[in-house]
Amino acid sequence: MKHFLCILGLSILMMNCQEKKVETLTVKPEAPFVWEAANVYFLLTDRFNNGDPSNDVNFGRNNITGFLRGFEGGDLRGVIQKIEEGYFTDLGINAIWMTPIVEQIHGSNNEGTGTTYAFHGYWTKDWSALDPNFGTKEDLHELVKVAHEHGIRILLDAVINHTGPVTNMDPVWPDTWVRTNPQCSYKDYGTTVECTLVANLPDIRTESNDNVELPPQLVEKWKAEGRYEEEVAELDAFFERTGHPRAPRFYIMKWLTDYITEFGIDGYRVDTVKHTEPYVWQEFKKECDYAFAQWRMNHPEKVLDDNEFYLIGEVYNYGISGGKYFDFGDQKVNYFDHAFNSLINFEAKWNAKQMDYESMFKKYSDSLNSVLKGYSILNYMSSHDDAQPFDPKREKPFETANRLLLCPGASQVYYGDELARPLVIEGTMGDATLRSFMNWEDLQSNPKAATILAHWQKLGQFRRNHPAVGAGTHQMLSKEPYVFARTYSKDGLNDEVVVGIYLNKGPKELNVSNIFAEGETLYDFYSNQEVTVVSGKVTVDSNFDTVLLERL
Image (cartoon, rainbow, N blue to C red; front, side, top):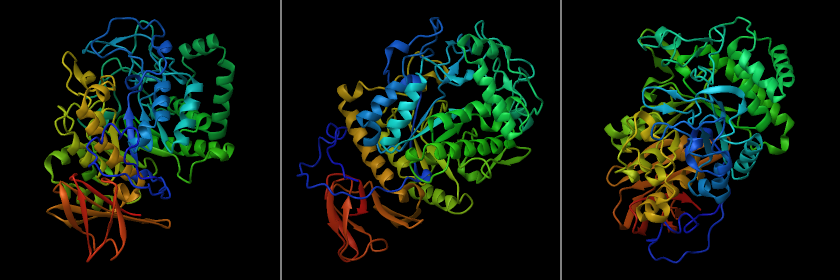
């Protein structure tokens, strides 16, 4: 692939590009995609980019809501536009995770923080349909196609634990499907799983193996839409093939795996994992793997590589220190084996606050190459429902990038991290402060945002180009200045890089003798210049404090 210096996106950003002449760009083969080293962009579908204003209001969703608690127009078409513009490519993103896009409740709910519509996607009304506020099936087909053409995987968001709240437009599901009490107290395993997360959020009876009929509201809805017979026939075929009882969780698994067989999505981020019985996720993985195999068999021309379907679990408060286990207090549960390829690492932002770089990077590398070998974690510094992000006031956007994008494991860039989108917004209540619309306007009006974006792009592209950054073995080469290496070797791929951060500006000497051979010509991706190993060292003369060394 090409080394970029002043591609659009960096042209604004790298205005202080050292006034050096851009030499002929070097072409290198693309590195294979490795989920364990993925650079994932997480966005709220409704809050990222409005590509189709005609779908902004549906189902009479016109009630006045609390601040930032209604639909604001973001949609699949808006994501497609940004993929086509090269925004994600320039940022080094190779996977996009979007909040759920299935049909949401039509009414609004007051959850104690103001009247709220289901803009976030976690209040399902019908798993078998897309919500028109987010787009159409044609949009989703095009999104996956365009993303794959740009080397980007698509992760949708799966919710099996609960439905949406009950409203005057959205009746409660039958008792055979849901429980409406007790509310979870989170004291132990039982009071975390066999309960509703919050008031008025009906909990799917995922423990049940009883055969249940379709909810009357779905039957009525499907008949009105003219697809009842088709949906029932598909369900009959699913249950005949699998032998599963017609229990609530298996209906939902059928509907969710349809997005694999029909659209060819690459993975699921799974919501509220610890609030559902662990065996449910082993069952879900089996159905996802089957569906993905069917899709690949039916669409061989669209298969990107040999990677299997990927499952990332949200076990709230899981941290890498727990290894394979999450501790409920009265029991520990392993959510990795036979279920999830990766779990979201809620510990990363705390480690970033409390540990120096070397202590954090070594800890993560050691764990991922021992107790978690064969699995991975997804690190983040901010997210949609974490009220204590690493840098809430966006005072440390460069450190945030360094901590996230150079850390072993996969990285989750929360939309706007790369533009220092504000996370503290006056007038909001609760998690709404984390969910403002993407601050695109800052690219035109705020020079600092462009400079921040430049740094995120450089680190992101380097991470994408080198599986060693996220999936390799970490080795410190120098404590002061801080220089480290990452090495990765698997399936015939050998990848080695050397990284230095917080270096002096101007000429800087780095000892690379443990990684690169004498006389070898290297390339500093950050400053766009070639250097040669002399006496085990390279000298990089740039006005940047970051060096990203790779082989030519």
